[in-house]
Image (tube, rainbow, N blue to C red):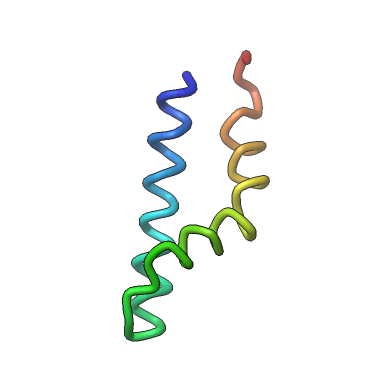
Length: 54
């Protein structure tokens, strides 16, 4: 289950990086990943694990 969580998280981070880089017109690289963690990690993890046995 943790492997699936990490895979899903990385996919979401990559989507965020792509979208934010497109908006900025440059590759934001690691900064976009850190931005995702700051803005979305908590909500993503709660949403992902809600209703799942840990």
